[in-house]
Image 1 (tube, helix red, strand yellow):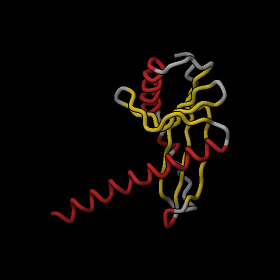
Image 2 (cartoon, one colour):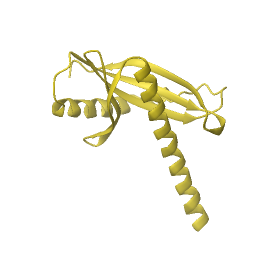
Image 3 (tube, rainbow, N blue to C red):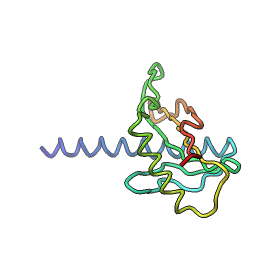
Image 4 (cartoon, rainbow, N blue to C red):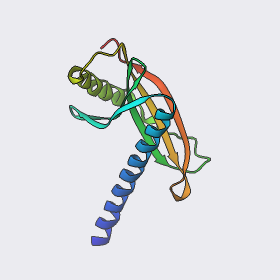
Length: 137
């Protein structure tokens, strides 16, 4: 019984570790492309925004999807962005906007997918800008 509990906890820690490493990799990737990252792991309502950044005068909310996988794996994590996840992110972003100082010209939601291979090696990062336009909210 104790072995099962410890194995379960190792699985949770492993997932969290992949998520944290993916967020750090996504942050470095976006900074190199000119975005100014303001915050990481922002709680907004019941949800969490992985990264909040500025791209010029546009506030960018970033959802990071990290995974371990083989190089022949076609899945990126982006396919998990269903309508329910998008609606939850939209609510969190709108809550953040209400409390954030200053008013940027535009708002959008981007997705960054990060894949790690064997031995924790970074395999691939993909950036999907403007998955959701949040200006109308």
